[in-house]
Each structure stands twice: as structure tokens, then as C-alpha cells.
Image (tube, rainbow over all chains, first blue to last red; front, side, top):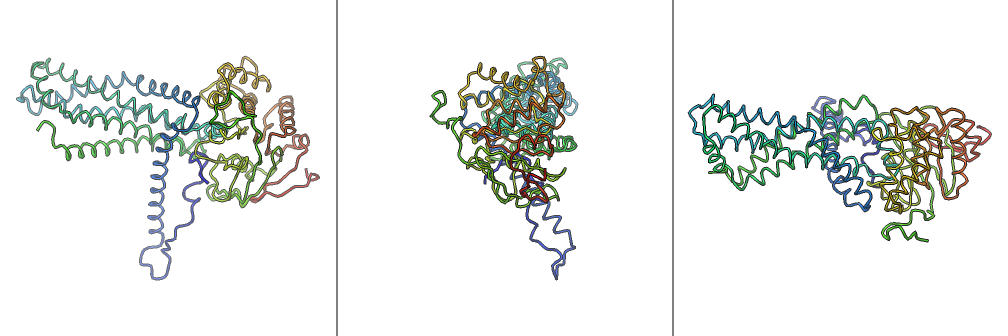
Length: 298
Length: 247
């Protein structure tokens, strides 16, 4: 029987048949319990990964479930989520972006004051646009909205709100998970562009105030460093990081087992795992792009 | 007869559904506790059953399982002949299976006011049910009025409502969907005598409706006496028939 993963699930450790490994078997050279612990941990991670992947596909798939009215309700919630996650984060992202752009120029001058103006433009492209903008935007959204999403969903789960929706034939994946997922993807993508623009403007302003370059130098360096491959790199990072900071908090929020005391633990886990996943994803994508196309601008 | 306002891809939501609630050999374990152990219960279409049991015996879990709200470990649960727990719950409604579930604590969406809570499922299924936005509001107001929720309460968030009003809003949310499978988890606990009497009358109404299959979990003698339906007891995770005299 196909079953929703978001109904009150059995606990992972007790709902499954016992592991077949038996460290107490005759002639076992491994300390009793160690194999069981490692095995149980591995099985636990496997199940978490399986449920995570299932949730992502089921949430995306929920959009293909018939129901025009349901799609309208879901769209309305998605738009509100974009407002909360994207629009309301603008002041924070602006401040962080401006400071990051300024700091990079200041540090560059401290390390290599004699660098020509074009190099500063290239550094802004390489460091800010390719790395800092997507990653820091994702970190800001994870810290701000990821916590909120995991806590909200955790409380909804603990208070039987999710079960209440399911009982009325409402798909939680469609009106709870998908809008938050879509909201963070759109928000991170747009905020990344915004972050990049503010950081570069800030870097330009600081370098001009310090008198280390002219606008022409910076524009020249900027133009030299920017290559067509930057567009897919930027897009993949934005969508991927946006997915991570929506997906993991939704998963951990929905994983609350019915006790309110689970909520802060899951929210904390959601943010930590999101940040870790963002850094790993960002590094992997950068490595993959540089492996495929070589250093841009070469 | 098909309702002309319902898109042809959907089954008429008001069509009579054959097959009641079929719970077969269901087991459910929560942590180290075996809550349901090969539990079996069949309720025919239009039937009503009361399940009693001591505190912590698993009555609520049985209701969740029967309504397809929890993932059982073994066995099967069918509503109207269909698996009760599909990945997308809306699938049931598109096949004419409308569940109503009144939770002990209400289970209302906390960031929506009372009328929005009642209207949400109607809006979500407006095309399947053939409702306009006006119909949705009208039906939501009618349901709230039926359970005597005051006009001054309908724009309040659940957190700003008393327990009894929250429970009535939850009941209104369920009855607004005109369910043909109704589950009540201690429906009159925490209610004042007048409201409890109102809830009993509503339950008796559904008991007599041959289109509604109903499962009630309660230990309240007054409600059991009012319903006068077959009684079962949940003990040790298993469901056994209970003689009426034992009430």
C-alpha cells in the first residue's frame, strides 16, 4: 500500500525488522554492539536520505495532481512565501552584500596594494559573483527562513495540523512543502542577483573612494573576467542552493514526531544540515565547472 | 447521477460510495509500544461503531489508522474499497471519499482564523465539489452557525479561542465537507453540557444518515447511550466486540 510519509510515522529504530547482523554470533571477532551500532546508524542515514529524496520528488509531483482550485491555493501560498523569504530579506541582504563587497576590496588592497584597477574588477567577479553571492545569500536565507520553516512545520506536525489537513483531502506536500520549496528557490535566485549587484557597487564605491582605480579600470576588469559560462554557473548555484535551504528545513520540520520538544532540535538540525549542504554543494558545483570549462577568462 | 458542475475527470463527490471502513490485521508500533496488534474491524457503509478503551489503549491511533492518517506497519485499511493512505490525500476525495476527522485538540491551522480554517478545504476542492467562492463562504458560515460558533469568534485565530470553541470550529470544518466517512476522537470531551448535547445531536444525525460511515472513540457513557450502536473495546492492541450491557 502506498502511504504518505507525512502521516504520523513509526519511529525509525523500532518500526523496522531487526538487523540481521549478529555480533554475538560464535567466532565473532568484533566487540558486541559495535557492528549493530554502525549498522543501525548506516541504515538510519540510508532511510533519511531515501525519505529526503522521496519528499523532494513527491513535492514536485504534487503539482501534477489534478485540481485547479488546489493549484490556485498552492500558488497563493507560494507567492506569500516568496514575499516572506525574498522581499522581507532585502534589508539584511543589502547590508551584508555592501559590507562583503567593501571588505573584499579592502582586503585585496591590504594584501596587494599595487594591483592594477582591472584586477580588482576581476576579483569582484571571481569572488563575489561566482562564490560569495550564491553562498552568502543561501546562508542568510537558511538562517532566516530555514529556521522559520522548520519551526513552523514542526509545530504544525506536533499540533496535528498536518494530519488535520490530510484528513480533509488536502495534500500537505502541495500546500505546505511545495510553496516553501518554490519560495526559497525563487527567493535565493533573485536575492543572489541582488546580492551580487549590491556587493559589486559597494566594491566599486570603496575602490573609488580609496583612489585605487577608476570606473573604467573596474569595468574593464569586470568585462574581462565575466564569461558566458558564468550564467549557467550562477543559475545552477542559485537553484541548487535555494532548493537545499527550502528542502531540508521542510524535511526536518515534517520529521517532528508529535512532541513539541522535538521542534527546537529539528529546527537546529535543519539549519546546521542546510548550511553544511550549501557549502558542499557550492564547492562541488565550482569544482565541476572549473573541471569542465577550465578557469573562466583564461 | 453526475453533477453537471463537476469536471468530467472527477467522480461526482455526492455519489453513493459502496464499501465502508475495512481495517484488517493492522499493526502499529510507536517506539517500543505496540499500539495496534492485528486489529481488525469492519464497518459497513452507513454503519456506526463506538470504540472504547482505557486511557493510552490506542483509541486515537486506531482512528488515525482507520482514517488513513498514519502509516501502519502491516495490514490494510480501506475506505470505500480504496486504500486509505495514498501519497496525495486529495486522491480519495476525487474518488468520492470525503473524510471528516474531529481531533481531540482540534487540529486547526494555527495561522488561519476560524472561518478560513473551515473554508480552506472547500476552497482547495472547489472544482471537485463544484463550488464557487460565494458557495465556499456560504457553506463555511453555515457550518460554523450549525455548531453555534459566534459571529464575533469567526475571525479569531485558534489560539484566541477557548478549547470548546476550537473544538466546535474543528467540527464545523469537518461537517462543511459533507463527509461520508466520519471519525470522532472524544468529540465531547472538554465541552460544556449544552455544547456536548449539540455535538451528540449532530452525531446522532450522522448515525442515521445511510451515506455516512462513522467511527467514534469515546469512553463517555452519555454519548454511548445516545448513539446506541455496536460497541467495541480496544485492549492490548486488539479490537473485541463488547456487549451493550457492559456500557
